[in-house]
Amino acid sequence: MTAPIRENLSGLDLRAEIERLRKERNAVILAHYYQKPEIQDLADFVGDSLELSRKAAETDADVIAFCGVKFMAETAKILSPEKIVVLPDMDAGCSLEDSCPPEQFKRFREAHPDHIALTYINCSAAVKALSDVIVTSSSAETIISQIPESQKIIFGPDRHLGGYLNRKFGREMLLWPGVCIVHEAFSETELLKLKAQHPGAPVAAHPECPPHIVDHADYVGSTSGILQFAKNFPGDTLIVATEPHIIHQMELALPEKNFIGAPGADGNCNCNICPYMALNTMEKLYLALRDLQPRIEMDEELRLAARKSLDRMLDMASGTVGKGDLGRA
Ligand code: 13P
Ligand code: SF4
Image (cartoon, rainbow, N blue to C red; front, top):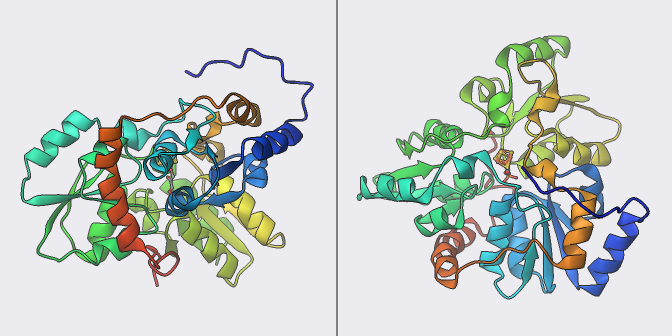
């Protein structure tokens, strides 16, 4: 899938080299919570999709090294076109983005001319350009509550997030049939077994999970919302139904507590590691900072069209991180 590294980097102190290049390039390293711990540990900022978009929009660095997936790095480029944006592995995609080819999405929109398109940020720039408002999981609730109930909506590409919002807000948004392969893989049977082994341990789930997982959750929210819940819940054990690399931040903040990744069908939570996020490595981050490649490039007309729906998100979500989350009261 992805090109192998042809150089021998084994003699290098990668951490030190990345530090050196970060200064030399006046670069900022942004990382999503699903990145490997060693990348999270050296990032200037670790966050959820909305927080990372905001950081990308406001940074005064010359280079953004984006340790996440392609749609996130593209978002950074859309919001900060004058910056060089590098993604350590250009094959770091997303099953939600793959599920939603722009031509098909355009036809879906055209078939429903009286609907607006509210679109999850996990999509291509071309799909953003065809959308009215972008949402992230931490801004969706605040944004949907600003849209009149009489307004018809199509929601894509995540049918589980869309379904969760429909149930919570009594909406009837038409849903694009995409799923996240990572959150889709959690097993209800294994989750119930785990709950029985840890009676009283709450479950925190991402809304990309299907309803049979979300229905067992005590808290449903974005990665930053789940992290906040982990910092505040009174018990000593938490079951975490999202990509397990976020547990690194929980263990750093609360070393005395026990965080258990919800299992997949084989009872082994490793099947819930995002294969796209995992493509980024220290070696590739070093090479990206050294060579300023692979770089996100975008046609200006497409960028401006995609920016409209992203700006609308940033405006509608402003001042709401944390309290505007999808978390259940
Ligand atoms: P958030 O970090 O915005 O909750 O999104 C999760 C995700 O799937 C990123 O790909
Ligand atoms: Fe996409 Fe799911 Fe990976 Fe997030 S965790 S990048 S939604 S495949």
